[in-house]
Image 1: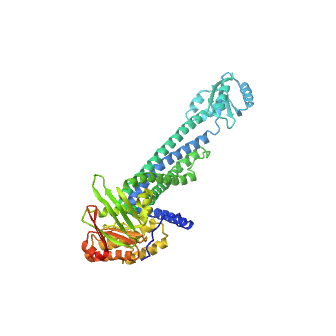
Image 2 (image 1 turned 45 degrees about the vertical axis):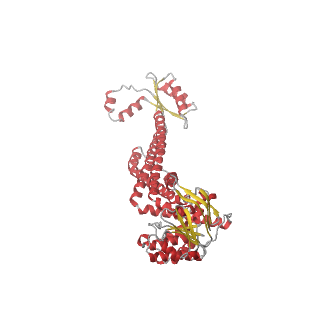
Image 3 (image 1 turned 45 degrees about the horizontal axis):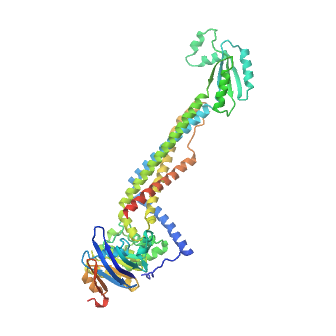
Length: 323
Length: 225
């Protein structure tokens, strides 16, 4: 048997003792992490169910994020050059159209102006499904006006485009101004709402994840009250007793987050086929969004932190009750 | 060393478990606390381990006045004690080795040193070959010896035991008490609560007798018949 300890008096910790204390603390962290992982492995069904609930909860905002990113990307691609169509009055001839086009080209907020003749408009109409019969019925009469296709300068904000549309409306020869960029503005507004919804949803589901981990750890602590009592009698500090439960929270969060990232990737893969079809339909001009790699890595890490917080909140309360 | 100075303990509801109790167990001494059921033996041990606080009086354990030990200091004090319980309080899902290792793990002892000390403690109680087994597979006596190994593995200055032979047959009880006497021989202060008078007499150690929380006799070792 080893020699008994002599009576210890509280003395200040020396550097060597502090180093030993830190090494012991670090070692217990490793031990707690491994022990909590083994405990999760000992009840695989319960662990899998908790991880699945967390994974699904965290995958939902990721899926919405993916959807929004794609809609935004499509909107960006389709509305990259939002032109303004300026329809001239029926009594305006080509000369007036060219004159007005020349004047407009001098404006600093306009990049280009294309003049489309009534005949070009009619030809275009004839190519559209269901209109060819109607165009033929017109014989030689062409009711379409001259149209100026005005391309605003790149980077013009919505207010400046509105001012330009207003100015075009004010021209004497102009009958109607159609701003094709307006739909883009509406889409952007809808996307803003969507982003806000995703944020709120992510917050709520993160809270749900926190509660799921908290409740699981609470049950775990309640089931191990005897062990906790023994550890405390043997001189374990609260931090020592709590540590394995905090690691359990971290593992739940980490695995739940990893599952969420995998699910999001699966959703992305499932959408890849239809997205490619859509891209082909638009002549390859679409750049569809994918989940950034940093987000896929950040989700498990953030979920691990959430798990830690959930376990920390519950374990503090449960251990107080256990003492 | 353990010193009780005019210690009383009154529980909520008015029951007085200990009354004006004063005695001292010197460093390296072994003593028994005995008395009928409800005499205050377990309360006395709970006060030493700071599971309970006295209502009145002073307790000093291993040079530390317990009144000065705050909530945060309790774990540190308990790490200086070895405790043996009647029901062993072993963790049934951990091996014998892991159970005995617990106080060292709590104390932040390095793995190699832990392993060495656990094996030494298990060898001392004759259970080295059982280190990989779960406590469930051991007999009651063996489980108690695992509990003792756990209590002494961190080399405590003070060892307290609450009815450590309560569930054991007489032969095994003598063996267990013999172990406690060996710890005393190497300088550990040992205080054992027991109501097994024949066993106490056989050990020929100092006996503190309680009755209704009061000290009614303090018999030196040499006077134990």
